[in-house]
Length: 447
Ligand code: GUN
Ligand code: ZN
Image (tube, rainbow, N blue to C red; front, side, top):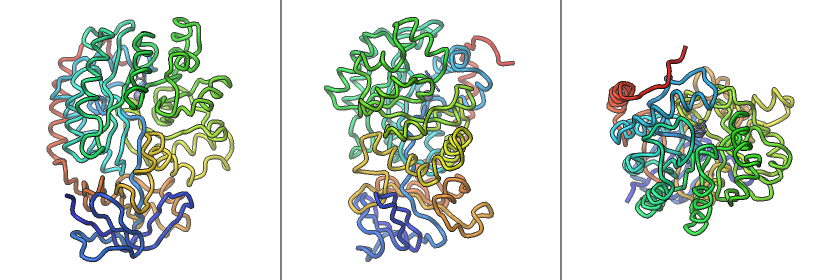
């Protein structure tokens, strides 16, 4: 049983339906939020002084690849399909269980330090068990999918799967891990994208996801060339193609959705499919800018993700909130996508996209305690901000995150990680990245 925690004297930005902001104490016990502002709090095991800080629900990133954290800086300046063929697939093919473990530990450590307490993550084809283990051990909250790939040109042999084997391995992971650690660890199906999956694989995934009540996490309409490949192969645009196979719906998260036409937006809306906006990744891969203003006006579920360290190269929700807002302002004017709206995308909207809206994403009595304490006294947050949402979205940085609680467990206290040894994570990541690069057969070098 976790210790009880009192977070004292902060400004609690609840992100509830009324956007309530409360000056007071937050009391956590049994993994749950028990009281806000003077509720039950006597005799807490741990008392955290949050004076001068904001207390927020932890950020929820709905598109991450923990397996790519070791590839940071090793795949710059390429567009999607070249990036995949020349760098990412060869490096993923070179992963061992040990290097994947190092990559996941590095990614989770970075996410926790930046206040992200929950992630939807697509792993590589092999060794996904190692990521589930790291999530369980570190106290992290994640929905993890084994990448599925049974088709495609220039796919390294180690990543090319037989359709049935891919489904069987995914089902074995589902059986073993979905719902573990009191529901903190969850499974999703993760077919990579329509370019690298056969229609048989995709329709099997659609059926099984319904039968087993789990999510599907994939990429769609990120890049013009990708869209052309799908249309050439299927005669349909990407979103109608996925829809025709049953891969739309509340339980489906589609990363990117940049190159979508009116009909495709109508499908996303009609089917309540979740769109994941990854603004930094989209800019860095030169993919384009998603029509987020339009999607939000249509009531489509939009949430945020950093994607992977291989295309961002940070896993930082502050950067994603800020960039998401700035991009829509550049396109449509400064009134669009307010700081408050961006903060909702980063918290409660992400939680709802994962089907966890009743459990996390806001600070409300009875919810699981995924909580972050963010200092507001740094130079870049001074003077004392009149509008907290503005300060958090536009000014705050990962280094301002002081304390992080996930499912009622302290995982960072005053900047010190508690469930992973930070120097060890860094050493292990450097060592494993070097070994992996020696193993990887890259298609050519970047210029
Ligand atoms: N599309 C297919 N695979 C990937 C991937 O690993 N990252 C991104 N950003 N897009 C993809
Ligand atoms: Zn991605």
